[in-house]
Length: 404
Image (cartoon, rainbow, N blue to C red; front, side, top):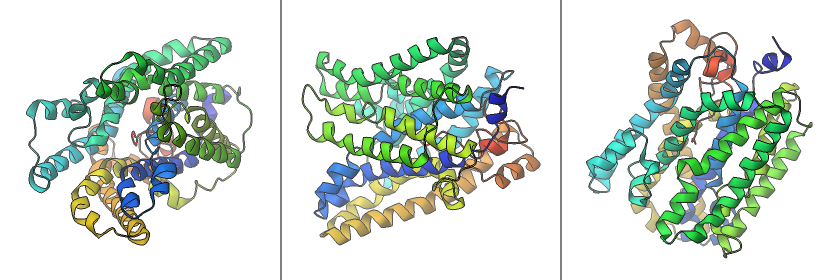
């Protein structure tokens, strides 16, 4: 067994903690109305407005984790089964909850055809906002992830056959495509299609996933320089703040859609690598503590539940937001409530459903729980996990959140 394969079994708790921070960015994007109503427009502009970049982080992390945990001998069927078991139970549960909320609380009719697209996770392939953002709006990212998962076994074969020079060329190409793609909007007439093409169209987001895969390959091959976690965090934070610029001062030279992924792609990649290196070297980062690992464990559930809570209470809460204090209080209250609901969803839906779908024995699930479960679908110690990696490590570096 190679040193790289041995490294691939070590826990990466820092990536679990970072998952929760990325989910928090998406939450900020969806709560900007509270800051605006409270007179904190600057918070919306420079902190919350570009929160959709958190989705890009999840796409990067997904590719990184799946490649990091990959081992030869895994089958396509086993991989697809684990991925389905990982993402679908929470998706189906929140889809059903969204139907109830839309039909009873918000009183919005549901198109059966659109609902079916959501159930099948193919809604992001339709360039109509009322379709790809329908039902539980954030689940369009799962439509992208499903596409990535479908391609992953083939991407592994292709990318692992390349030499170091070939990998670096593909890496540069994937970064270039992600950065330049927003400029393609100049050739699209429909405003709605422009948004969809650079934001939700699954092939348009594939570059981020591929960058994550290659970064993991280079890490395990020992071809990446040592980067301190503090430096990685500072670069990522600066990149995130910079992403507000095209969103706020959009021009033909600086398209607003650059803030979705182009500006943060490299900074987030640096952060992921620095976090992984910190864990592999035994240096404990600030996001690797037990609290952050637990929150990271719940981050996928948090991601899928938070916007449903927001759209449910917003009509009643928004009139009460009349000052900066009430704006912050509303945001903080919804944040804490979302965490609580995520914990419930994780405990009573995500974890038991994944266990049942994967056919895990009780003993194996106890091993996952003992490992600080962060997703039950990526690297670990004794049981087979995502792409053939033991489940205790898997419990530490799950990639969805999206998903995320």
